[in-house]
Amino acid sequence: MTDMDIQIPDLSYLKGVRVVAAMSGGVDSSVMAALLKDAGADVIGIFLNVWDYSRDEVSRHGSCCATEDAYDARRVAAQIGIPYYSMDMREQFRDNVIDPFIADYESGRTPNPCERCNRFVKFGALLDAADELEAAFVATGHYVRREDDADGVRIFRGDDMRKDQSYFLATIDRRQASRILFPVGSLHKDGTRALARRFGLLTAEKHESQDICFIPTGDRIEFLKREGAKAGFVAGDIVDSAGNRLGRHEGIAHFTLGQRKGLGLSGGPWHVVALDGVTARVVVAHPAEAMIHRVEVGELAWIREPRSGEKLQAKVRYQMPPAACAIDSRDNGFELRFEQPQKPTAPGQVAAIYADGELLGGGIVQAVYRDEPTAI
Image (tube, rainbow, N blue to C red; front, side, top):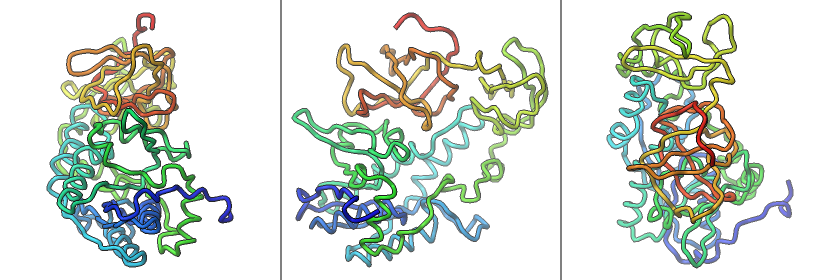
């Protein structure tokens, strides 16, 4: 990729404006900070220390918040000439991410720790820091576009659909969104790396994180056992939707809704369609029966509420494309109904609502239903 191929975002409106840069030690946040500095913004880099990695016996963490990532973030800040601070967020992370993560797996839910970290830790802490530092904005390396108009802040999916991260921001509210910038949101990943090379950043060739940041080894089961998730490892039956016993298992924490591999059952294929934390039962169904038609959503947040008659789409899994849907208000939430049946999701996952690529907001899936909905 040549310099002519890179569409550098216009950040000139930030000249002289103080911005807190959320630095993770990865290439995306490094380029974000460099772009802000290059545009003349008054940039302050902040790294959030959320986990004690001394307890993990791994030689290379490969995750967004590991010790070497803090070191890389500090060195990048020095490279581009901005002040750098590290904030100790371990207690808040334990309360708002780790403990709910363990409780969800014990009860049969499938948590989304990245969403909870964004909602309860990152943006709360960083916006508080921005207030203390008299900064107008917080900037992140998310692949999400912000395009405001006369009605205010509007958030759109990133241009690189393979990297779009809007799904993880579906539960931030309008107030938070109004103060968050996404300088790399209009870039594709290869363009971001090309800019990193142009800026001479030491993270230009750094590998991407794939694991949950507090499980650097990737072994979720070992982590849950070590952290005392005993209820998730009570043995129980595997049954079909009619209640027929098909086998045994060693704990519902080994499963997630929609799972189809590693079940060890004959007569398949099977999908996990329910996890019961009280009876320790795992319910499975054949693919056609496993498809979902509607979900119940709570913990709502709107960046922009849907307009009357607006055509809506939703994602209830990160890797699914937005699918046509309708929503009906309920007490403290809404019911989301798909026009076409979708692959299973799980309580605890995010339901992100869109309108033509614009992220309107969303919430957390509370219940999943496989029965046919009424007409949309």
